[in-house]
Length: 324
Image (cartoon, rainbow, N blue to C red; front, top):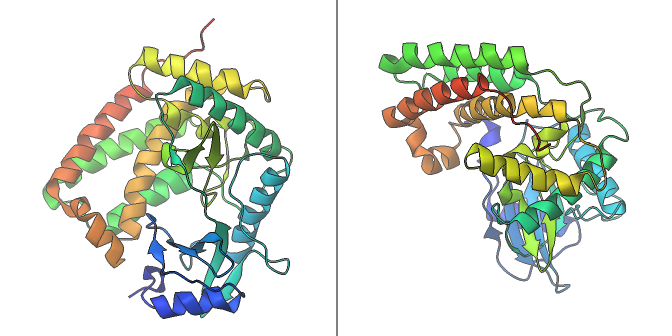
């Protein structure tokens, strides 16, 4: 079994790792909803609640993880509401028994309401401030959002997995190729910046009258619209209203290039294909076969054929335009 499955990360090893940095849990470890990494919440003897994250081996290099942390500290120093890791003796990335891990303060809150326009405007302000920091300098080690990794590499992983049912292969790969070709023609980024990278509702917490952004695990370089488009849902008029609200807040702090609206559907296509490739790449991890059992069913791949056809049509539609 590949090491990336966390096969050797048992509760005793997790506790030993946490205690190795001078933090002593007084409660049990509560697993949090994360499949890519292993994440646990606990209360320590100092009375504080923490979250510890064990990074999946072989996914990010040490330099890439440290750059994620540095970005979080940079944002926090500029008062962008992000959960940054805890530093102990000047370090935020630790290692125990071959596993790299970090400690974060536990932040409570309710889930972001994607249809709440007040919250959308507030999020727009926060993302605008995040991008103001993000464009001040480039990443040196983190990856970019690009068609090679999100489309071509993902397709290769899917093919090698042999998970697509034989009788659906022709239909699936035919439409997949069309989506990849169309997306590659449309996806061009003039001014990539450092991004949150995965700014969906699950990574935003509402605390009182404010929002907190969490989880920079997927921070990458790419177009600014990447951190905005996942907030858009519903029909075209609803999306225009949501976009206008987001940008009303965003442009209080930062300018937005309207040409990037043409990247929304290509980015959606890339996320769809990348997600399938991600599941296929992790399929030997028991946590994935247990929690995503539908991934190996005929029904799932039939649905993906339909979804890709709909996405190809969306790619050929005119892009959203801002209200005049």
